[in-house]
Image (cartoon, rainbow over all chains, first blue to last red; front, side, top):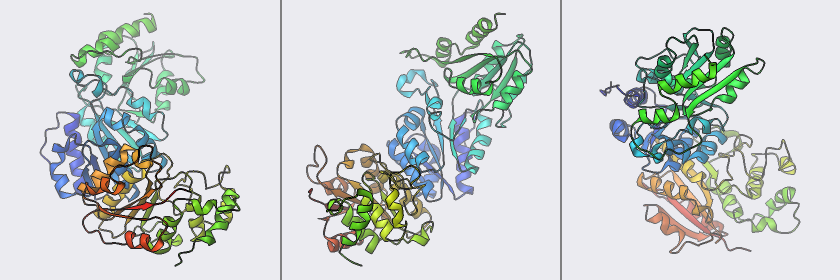
Length: 303
Length: 224
């Protein structure tokens, strides 16, 4: 076992992936400089299937496509903007169009480290995967959720995006692929994605709503949402830690035959903040802090 | 083995309807023929063989010569050429690997084949397989920065299973001062620059040993 603390999602990812590389010769890893120190030994032990291409993200995804075409299960890892946005066409063509699988694992999330500014923020990542067919998207809410999500992703053949963050809930939740009921109420249903759960629970304390949690947002568990909404008033609030409204179309589709209302909380689309500071300060601007979520919920339910 | 490609003309004409000699002007024709006739270890009954050589047509635009060679070598039935670009045909103006037996990558957007080929060369080496990867790009396509990322990665990692063929028909808007081969040589590639119509020269260059490093063959093809 690799001896790395698993206090963060990134550390948990490194521990579990190093084990997978040791145990399964089909697993490959392509890095672009970021996190290479977490894989020093694997880079030495498996020099042709654990590859650091340097700061070359187009080649990073293309190399992953080539590894997949020769029978490997490539994991590709770097900061979100350089994993998803910069080589977007490589994701579309070198993986999707070639019809090969890969597991893309990002760090940085929407604004894990606002002091680094806009260049290291990728709130649009999940929305971008929605433009391409067949992607599974995991948004773990706790470091302990990373291991099972990664293991499931590696065991499959498909295209998977695993979005790691330094933001975390106080405790892990079951990883099932389905929306998990956390609270039961009657006025509406609140879906909390990944690390937003604790703020959602704080915001809904004493409010008569159902709360669902999921660390897997694609595929969208339409049946799970439908089951929850069947036992509440048809009011749905989705709280996502990335671009606001990313799952609005999925909610509308899941409830297409039910008169319903929905609102979305997430990273605002109408401005670029141009501010540094802390993640908590950015939560406030986007209404993703507990007070902001409570305010939106109050307006939405008019209670 | 033949140095004559005139037998491909009727196959070419099934796609273009061209009765004259457009086929002979295709810049990729001679390289493709030499690869499939004399270099590549591939066969229609081995398209999934893990030990087959890989040929990646990165310069996917204008694939008529490629399809003609695939038909001549038995990968696709020549009658399929009559359907090309029709809805439901396996053949389009850019190849799709999920549709055509023996086509290793879908291509069309420039600058994707070489990075994928680098990944395949890593994968084959990791599996200790002797199979080789050949990727064909154009001198205009070489403008794309993704190629230069891949050239560096392949050179620094000594990917000796990889050969890049650059068809140089002098179409890059701003040219390549100092020559195309030099762009690879500084990254530790073995290089050869040959007449892209000279089959024996192409064959010699494409089969030369290049231990411990990737190989680039620049095939000079004059336009017209």
